[in-house]
Image 1 (cartoon, helix red, strand yellow):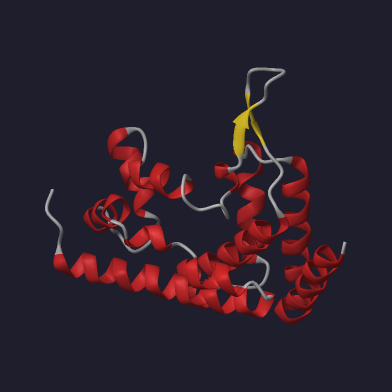
Image 2 (cartoon, rainbow, N blue to C red):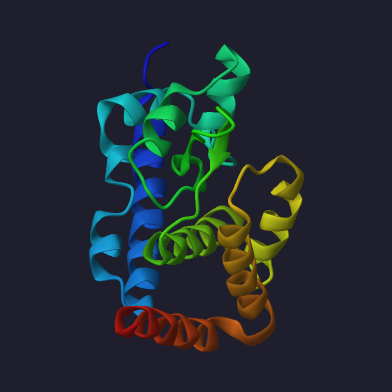
Length: 183
């Protein structure tokens, strides 16, 4: 399957728009390095080429790759290099010998929050509301392998966004990060 140049440009624009929006949110949260380095692997050949080939504009190319192959090589590459994805934070428990979720460090939970808000804004466009990221989170709940503490914190932030808006939520996040540094 060849790369359609038009789709390559559209995919580049989509991921660039998303990255810039995440960076804006990370800056509001006070996590500047995460904002600058967020999702750089999307520009790697392992992710970019297949995503251009399968670009549709209405959903992640990873979904199309899963339908085609039964799995997504781009997603596996991505989640293995980006600590803001809860899927990165799984490991074998030495006691149970089972793959289990690990509690995420606060800074990556905050980046994950910023990522989810930005993704909702990019993919939903003018239909986005501050409740959209929470609704997406709730739809995925039955399938999610995430540490309970990580899930609770992310949900708390998404509910706060839904009920009190961005300004309040980012102010809370900055206080939360400041408290974490002083303890």
